[in-house]
Amino acid sequence: MRDHEEPGAEPNAGPNAGPNAEPNAGPNAGPEKPPVGAAKGTSASDKRALGTVWFTLFLDLVAFGIIIPVLPFYAENFGAAVWQVTLLSTVFSLSQFIMAPVLGRLSDRYGRRRIMLLSIAGATLSMLVLGLASALWMVFAARLFNGACNANISTAHAYVADKTAPSERAKYMGLMGAAIGIGFVVGPIIGGLLALPTMPELPFLVAAGLGSLNLLMAFFWLPESLPRSSRRGAAAGGEVKRPRRRLLAFLGGEHRGTQIAALSLIAFGFYTAFANMESSFALFTQAIYGWGARETGFFFTFIGVVIAVMQGAVVGPVVARLGERTTLFVGLALMATGLIAQGGVHSLAALLLGGGLIAAGNGLLNPSLNALVSRASSENDQGLNMGIVQSASSLGRIAGPVFAGPLFELIAPGAPLIFAGVLVFVVLGVASRTVTAPDEADEADEADETA
Image (cartoon, rainbow, N blue to C red; front, side, top):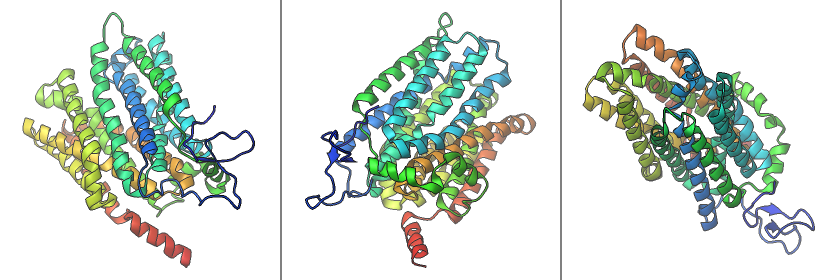
């Protein structure tokens, strides 16, 4: 597959090099090109490329969101028991957990564009298999494959890091988060409208059609962001050559004390709490407020809108004023407060206020976390480290629902929410002790090099 690169992105490889290649080094060579993301500002061409990534993520998440309200009932058509329906989510997250660092490392070595195209194509195929499934095992196989392909979000974040200056990175990470949030708002609404008893496969076929459109758009409009010289550097990096070994080393504690380990731990704790809440929230609102699927769906739409607004319009100015580290802390505090308010105070006002705080905290937290990961990574490790943190997030999504059921049944309907809030406060305490501001981390690195 031929890379579509920005002008000047690759060195001249020989007589067949295209017009986008850099000239060979020599006496007439121009000034050396700055590293990826090192420019003082984001150019107009880079902004166009980032716009394409935004729309790609949006379509990807719309297609994904379409199946959320219909998948449990679709699986029941094949005779799935309740535990099997729940297992579909576990299979998806487990696959994403394993594949995120692999795709991230492949994007470091072979370029972001190729990996994003392959991931979009795979996700589209998985939707088609879901729509044409004739047995439950096909539904599970499609979800397993879809989880692996959905791990490309870390590649998209690495793309943003390639194209933006460090000072603007959180703002653009926030815009990408807004694409994800809006996709989650639009997708479930479309899925609910398409859920026809006479044609249960329709939402999946529509999702596959959107995936095909997404693939065509990315193929023609998405340029490569990572210069070939940087890909050669990633391939030559012996200590990070194999993502699986790197991930196992992280899980084994060999990277204890590093910023990536600290940020991965924060992602794991946050998503454990969030998945704990998410998996039991419909049961909670049914038990306390008598809500059904329709009311709960509208509530999640409200959450998605707030997250999208926060990530699209608020997080940039907040980070500019407070910095990524403090913004991360504020996001954690807001979310923890909202979870405890919802679980402990049973009133509609507390439910709405708590939901707003959860959404606002989420909207501040995710872009700040991704920006901190990017700032803590070298040029050759952007994709890999984004993938490791996304894998930690997926592991949290696997672990969270395990606690929700027993807490709900053995203690109280609001217990999972309160547990999640307390867990987020614990994560905040850990973050305050382990996460350093990017400038402080740079100074520490320089001190280590001088010593």
